[in-house]
Length: 203
Image: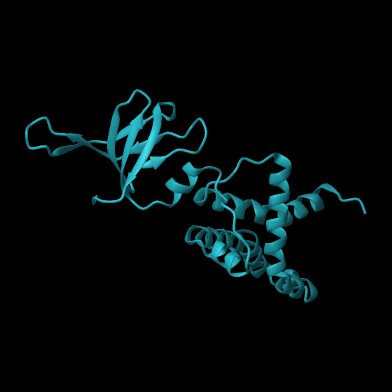
């Protein structure tokens, strides 16, 4: 059967939008690999099918009893729930499972060896580390000692893998051997050689 333009829009809305919402919110919380347009399309479609399958009982009842005719406002609310709220909640839940390592624990419990899902070691460490002091060695041999906390930021992997430290510690020039804190510092990705994470110390 040939679909006219309105039916095509409805099908795209039902089988792509939930996956787009799910994937978009998840990507804001968990580092993702860059995917081709074809793979992204299949991801949206697959996530939408999972979301719609969860609500299939409600969709069936709504269609079978023709509630969309007699309850227009409730129908609009149900569409908003299924298409937007449900995939948003699923994205938050799956990101929480990923960050806490629950999915890997479940896979390990089944007897399989879980693989790292991060794109790089940079993504893995900086996306999951707690606030910590870091010692950044630059390519010219200089060092920057700073606090990577809530007000800091690490760019994506690749050419934009820069880092902003909200506070830096500067060694004192007197004989006390202490240090003084300065403001934040931005370090370009092409200047970073090594980042050492220091476990001791408080913010």
